[in-house]
Length: 300
Image (tube, rainbow, N blue to C red; front, side, top):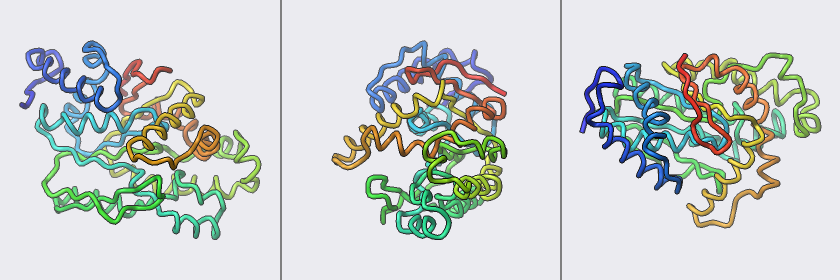
């Protein structure tokens, strides 16, 4: 079933089917039920923005646990069915370097690079290779799958055999510009003050943002940014994410509340920087409230 329309007001006849499908998928993924009005006003505009833009390559970014993955999965399940466009979805997290490689980074550059997350801990060459194959319609495309609990890539990869129309890369730091010197040098948490006194770690990942990651992000046409109300909510959202991950994997491994609080300090500087600059730089900004629901959407 493909929606044919010129603008949002012209699709009322098909709107109920789309909303029902999204509502069911959202409940299945989150165990939360959104009202039809919420979906109409806060979820559907994301679909229409992507379709109406006529572009092929999108970034989705925002803090940990904010809901990027859920939205991407809902797009995966419904975009082709209702809009006739197949999505090739990528998660930045699947391109992390394995623990063994990060041990080398931690010994040769800085100990904090042992922890995955900041720019410089992803294999961007693999992402660029996927984009190159997408641009040339060279299939099959092989995509890595990262096991966060085991902290390494799985031997089995995801294989995309059929041609896709749109590629979306979702990741917490996607689209972030490099941090200005004044804010980069300011200590904002214990981790920076205690373990990065010479700014080696910060300068390393910021140079990665300025060069390697900037080149990657330029390959994409549009940036969709999920903006958190403030950083204090990121810890609780990330803890919820960790609990869900353990339930899904049926494992007792994973991080507790204290470990999460320490872990997200690695992300804090870039996340707060993104909150400062991306609402005015992103093509579509989605503002999230304290209940993790979409408050409003702003188009640049």
